[in-house]
Image 1 (cartoon, rainbow, N blue to C red):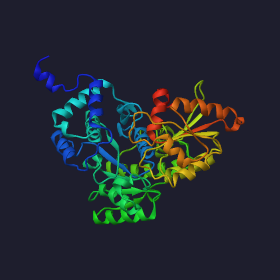
Image 2: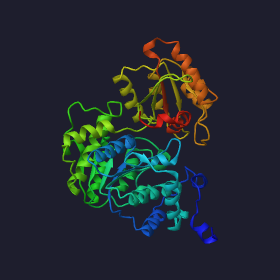
Image 3: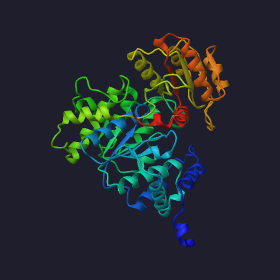
Image 4: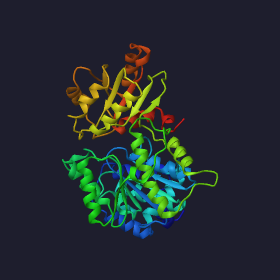
Length: 429
């Protein structure tokens, strides 16, 4: 291979590309859209030739995106889904009709981006462009793009879109977005575009007021999802928890706006009721009230990525609806999480011990010893997640049969460590 060919093929293997991403740094942010817009313009993909749904908010973005993707696939649409973060490999973030791309495809896409000036991009910007380019190559009809952090300067906001979707806005990333709901909502509302319809569902009143204000400034309409669609009676959801009905309603409302714009229709053998039923039942995403069967090295588990106060309210309601009282809890979180609201809710979920393992290779993780001081007497510091799983299995065995499940919750990075141990749990059975 000539020197010119070697330079053009910046990444000869997927491992080389992943090493490049690691060098960029997962948490390295530079609040500007200049770099990504330049690269998208070079690729002529700032306005892709496919429909784009932009999903923002604090809680429920992943679930709402999964519902939208599933609804679209149920109508026969070729569908791209971009989500974050990942658990074990960045390839989880980009899916075509539910399937990850292979490593060779990732290298090809990454090399094309580098040729377009991609060496200027941050970690999240690079992956966002990679998703946009992959969806172009696969000629998707719809791309569902989940925002990462905020909205005003989130990389996904560089893309021209067809509908802007807001899940519940709550306290999260206050050190970046602000200490009031209004401040957080104002940043996320920075993704609202002139004339592009906005849809939301269950929303904090203060946040909703901000969304309405910004939508009016941008001469667009803010829709409440339940006013756009009719939900099926007693639908079956592929995601557990009563809050998933709200996420599904939001996804369906947003999808309805796209259907009206593009004239999509279900296959001849189906009607819209079939699409709803299939779309809701087939939607799934790992780590959201996910049940995992017991194994030799761990008990039966419920996995949930609740990591802020609003999410813990939904988690508590979900456990109550399923009549689950965990025998023990395994918990971990980031240093920047305000725990005044979380810890009391965490303690109320179980009367059993709370095991606190470190989150490996994560400099932002709160050390278990510091967390123990906040959790109190029921806290048990562990040297690893493996030890926490073994000890929680023992604790569960000491309870009666109805309480043998253990809750593993908190940071998605803690769940990612579990999925590294049990990679098959990343895919739906």
